[in-house]
Length: 114
Image (tube, rainbow, N blue to C red; front, top):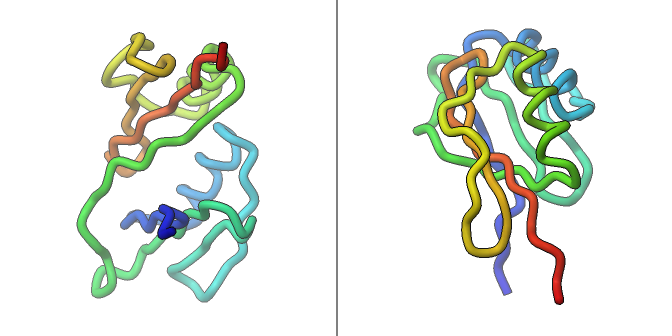
């Protein structure tokens, strides 16, 4: 079965984007040249593309976390702008934010299974 395992975001500055995501979520990035960096966890990874000729259309990646309140605080502290405060949805809680390059992403915490 196919699964979502990578998201590539166009960014203005790879170093700045790496610092934001590292601060907000503790992610480590490998550099693949002067304008590209990516996580290499082998799970769902994220690539940061700063080459204007290679940038793709924007997506809304969803990041699952264990503690949504801590994630909200970390995103805000790292300079993210909250575009939708934490709300309930079937299956959990979620909020949306814009990163330093204006990308909108969502953060979710699934409800425990009963």
